[in-house]
Structure formats: C-alpha cells, structure tokens
Length: 300
Image (cartoon, rainbow, N blue to C red):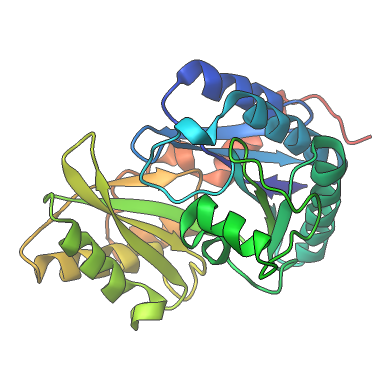
C-alpha cells in the first residue's frame, strides 16, 4: 500500500470539502481530512493499493477542478492549483520506487484525461520542491511557462487561471505541523521561521514560513518536518518556543496537519515533552489499522 496526501485549495466550504473527499475515497481509504479556513486549504490523507490509489487521486483532482475557482481564491497559504500538490508516499522505507511509479502514472493520466499541466517534484522531479513552482504565485508561474523558462512535465503549456496546475511528487513521509504565536506581529513569526528552518541555519530537514491568521488575530510558524529522525518533532517545538521567547512571545497552540507516525509521538513521550495539538487519534498506524478493518478487500 501507498499513502497520498493531496492538498486542495479549498478550506472554507464544508460541503465542497466533503464532495472532494468523497471523490478521493472512490478506490482508496480516506484516513483524515484537515480543512483550514485561514489557509483556505484542505489536506486529505489517503491509503490504498497503487492502482486504486491512482484512480482515486484522479477522481479527487477532477472534483477539485470542477468545484474550485482560483480566480476567487484568497488564503494565506501559497498555491498554484485547485488540486495544488499531490504527493505519493511509501508506507515502508524501501517502497519509494513504487511511490515514484505511481506518481509518474498519475501525472500522465491527469494530463491526458483532465487536460491539466503537471509539474513533477521530489523523487520524480529532480528533487525540486513545491516552493520552486509556487514562487511568485500562479501569475508568475504562467509567465515562466509563457517565456519558455519552464515547461510542464505532462499536459498543455497553457495554464488556465481557474484551475492552475497540479504538482505531483513522490517523497518520504513528512510531518506538517503549525505553531501559533500569541502575537499579531508577522515579523516575529517570519524571524522565528527563519531561525528554525534549515535554509536559515536552523534545524536539519525543517522547512518553515511565517504567516498571519486573519481569523484568530495571531501569527503562525507553519512547518514541514521532512526528516523526523534528524529533527524530532518535540525538539522542533522546543526550538520554536526558545526562538519565540527570545522575541518576547509564547507559543499559543499547535496544529497537526494530517497524521503523524507513531514513533514521533513515542519519542516526545520518552523525552517528556509536549506536542501541542497532537493526540492519539492522529497517529497514522492507529488510524490505518482501524480503517483497514472496516475496508473491503479491493487488492485485486
């Protein structure tokens, strides 16, 4: 089995999120849905056998393109597509090539059957990250494609401003985790993010950015921890606390986006440190086992 974590540019209309989630669950197990109105984004966590998972992802992407109009979209999270990013993730350490094969197959089908431009990233895209394509937003990506600087890996060269593009990738498991700060000063969140992320000289395998949350009046350090062994999540939390305290603010809460491996929670418990906003219902292995018990055998 493989995991997929499609991110869709819709987080404010429950009926739309539910409809897209139902499409993603066509031939796969929908393990979790995380909708965020400030980010205006929903993250769906799926698991399934390779063929069924690709079928489900294709159906979910089609639903997102039908129901989401980027021309009317306003949210704090960067995006370049209605179905913005679709990573395929191995559930076992030695299965990355299977995830890569599924990603390539999905990219070709999205291009051929939905007529969307597809860019590859991660293991199937020269190790490029989504930020490479999101830089400057969709208008800038359209300019880069129009000038010949970039070309889609599959699909047309013309980018529809309504639906955008799809970023399809294969990667190892990562943890998407956000920490809110008890201030509305965006400069503080950006400074903390800069100090914590690897590219700023911070922790290895940590990506971070500072965002303002209009709904709460707070700011947020939004992170992807792409190597939870080199940068244990509880140590990342403590680093954010220290950097925030040095600037006179405190961590006001945490938010796990999607699911987290059991070993991450165990490591935090062993260290006696808290993971704000994380509970047992968000542990990947627990959720997968419980859902597999309910799921009919579709392995054929």
